[in-house]
Length: 148
Length: 163
Image (cartoon, rainbow over all chains, first blue to last red):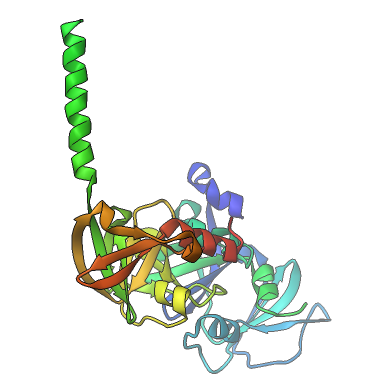
């Protein structure tokens, strides 16, 4: 994905992302890692997919811990995602599908680029007074202290 | 001697004298970060930005406040007071550095563009040599440490593992 974004200007590639929107930042996950979307859900400590229990992650709480933004109090959606491991990602925001031309993404400023990359943030774009981070969920969760 | 060559040498001589005179005077930007006063050579600053939004960046140390948007280009915001002394700055005033590091220092207040002789910069002695300062400047009777941008940026790169 990083290479695609780096050379996306030449490839003229567009890609669908699932957008989790929090105040002035958005978290973008590639839509092709989404296995299933379940709406009108609530907090669940145990989620099963294909008859197997999968780790449950509350992305709202992770974002709140990392950057102290306000997040919804209630969980309303659960997305089953496959990002190296299969997770049940719970959120109270309404995930939106967005199609983005990869040339719109930029790499992080050099001084924080490798650091952010090693924590799962591989690119970003400024969009409508917000910043949107394209995220490798598996790395992001590992560095957040979520054990798999 | 070739007259043209002689004239060219004379012209070069005048130009080098002019440059030499210009370089003896330096314009410093004197500014506050929290309660502390600092100075930077004005040519090390590309732009002063005020009241621009900082977008948060997950995981980074507390002195990296996030990313700001300068004409579509991202700059990592470093709270210089937090980096040097652990005190947080609340003002939204930023110095965009003119090097290629894409870094903006968050500061509190601009005091003045201060013109002084280059010799007015007192280098630090080897015993008190600090990677974060190149020396001190006498500004209206106040001693203003002059930031060593390369030293600070390299230290941040080292801490973030971005060397």
